[in-house]
Length: 497
Ligand SMILES: Cc1ncc(COP(=O)(O)O)c(C=O)c1O
Image 1 (spheres, protein in one colour):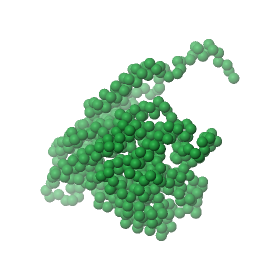
Image 2 (cartoon, protein in one colour):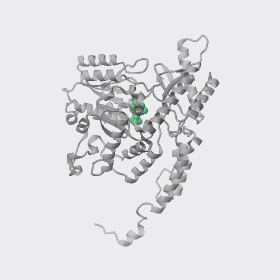
Image 3 (cartoon, helix red, strand yellow):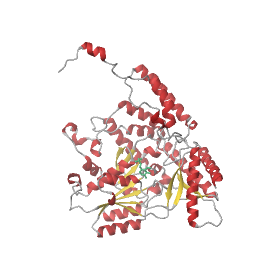
Image 4 (spheres, helix red, strand yellow):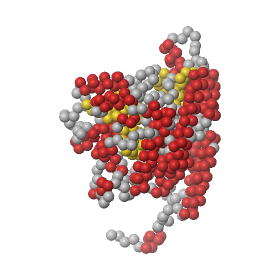
């Protein structure tokens, strides 16, 4: 082995180790001050980034710095270059997609988690992360009034939570899929998952990822209010069985992405029980509303589900990412994913939960900490109060839409999402030209409103109508913000109609 002389090391070694404690405090305090100001003056920024594609990239060096740079310079560039290229998800007038919100306790949780840098794979490598996850998820389960026999796991996103649920459902079939896979097996029929035609695309992606193939997902039509047609589900299952297909899982959605519609879970649960199918409920967005006693009717039937996914990173004031999968058959998840090589074997054995047994990842972030801090800081009542207010604001906005002759609601408003569109009348118009005109008008209104930078709305297609969506979920959104959105929408309508 070549011996490196002491002189060589001394001559060439760059300074090693991390930032000094003193600098860490100095910059850390400056960053906290910056974030505090950002949070409280976020309305000074346009909600939607006003940059062109490639604009940020063109301002950054193509190669990494050979020598370290001063923190002052790096922070200066965050201000100068990064912030203008942000779409401000934390802006109270972010009404697009599903509006979400971080919160102070959640940010603190992330800070600790980055500092601890725990890889929550084995209980031994992360007792706090493993046990706090159980505690925080038990608290959330109680707040959502879900049954006690639901175990819980934290994943990054609902896409991943639902994929793991479908994997567990596949495992429960006892078809040796884990061992033998699915390809080249003449003994295996086509396995079928059902969802409504309104289900989130993540269900289809999950089916693709698990190797079931897109044809394994049968999309059941929804009714006029965008809810799965339970009768059509039953017929599809019957038909599949007669054709030698093996139904094994139904995904119902509470709070669909386009319109926040609620599938008839009690009727779907009956069908699942009759046919021994795994029932997974995707409540990624709306699950948070289950903390309100007056909203529990929307969650009827969930107590009979095999699994349920909900995203505290959507509407529970928890910074991205944190999705929860509740499951009554944790053993199926474990059977689907557990693989323990020698180097991961620990003396605790089966007496503890090792989180790496419950998914495709080995290491996991310590996400439970931020959720636990959010739940403690706001408490059940504090969280419920904020979600209740968002629902009130949505109903208020919907009432303005309903009272106006120029606008209409396109879907019911069960939670905090309003789907609506402009529909001014013109004389002597055919149905066809009217449909095309209103689609184009609403799209133009949306772009006009978004280009002001004051609010950000998105759209969807519901039935044959292009619909605008106003989604409320930010912790700082007040009546003032939805009133301004309404004003801007009407200004655009008057300019364009
Ligand atoms: C009903 C539903 N399911 C799943 C998802 C996917 O969420 P994630 O980004 O956490 O994967 C969404 C996202 O909006 C959703 O609305």
